[in-house]
Length: 367
Image 1 (cartoon, rainbow, N blue to C red):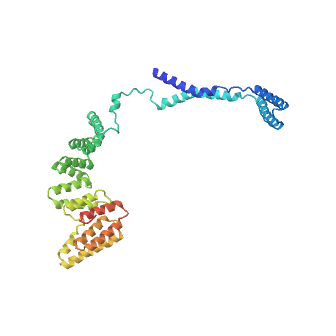
Image 2: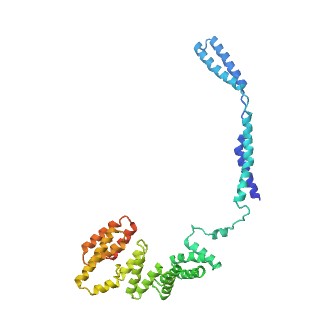
Image 3: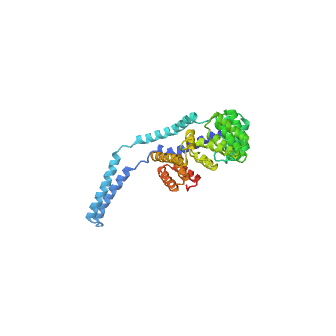
């Protein structure tokens, strides 16, 4: 309470220092004495003229100036004193002195926390602070979760951070707790599988593969799980199966999918073509054709693809198929021409241009 009293005294002193001049009246002017001085000056000018000390023209100019000042002093004597201004200033000072504290208290009581207790220094240090190092923040979250192990949201936030820090075993435990307390879904299962693979040095273990399969069972379009199932097949030597998985992903993916270039690179790594597989009818027909007819059929398909791309140049995957087809046919000049046309078609779309260049690198061309 003594601290509040000191603050009140300081506030009152500051207000008095500012408002004290407003309550003081102006110093009265002695207008009668000023009039007498001007009259004496006129008399003195007459004596100086009589004594020959100044000329008549200089004396006349002096009389005019002194007379002007004398008339001004006489007018001031006739004006009534302005007492109302002094009263207004004193009233403003009183209102400010009393009103300001009342307004301050009226605002503080509903908006402030006058009954809030002190916040110990130790608790301030433990409070979350975004300026602290990431390890400190993680430690604080872990301490919170030790006391509140069923906080699913906390586990969901902590798990990817632990994985980013390379603490894979802790991240696996956090993802499992997130699934337990937040519920099962494809995304959490895929994240858990990815973390298990990272803990094994990038190898998709049987445990990680099981998590990816659970994710696909929950959502057949889960991208991360599908990609890593392809990686698992590749690591097991089943490159055809891996290529089939990744080719199916590309077939369903939108052209602006951010992971498209990654899957294309993986597909090129196992020797898979990004071109769509021919239908069963087309394959059966091709088997019964001689070499000339088969070549004509392929050229016709390529020409139709090139014609379609002239109408719709945004299909990056189509351009890559066309360039690859020309290269397979041994027509490198047409491949280079298609490459130039493709870059012109997507020149105004930075993301499609990046995808095109990545795909060209995978085809062995300069991207």
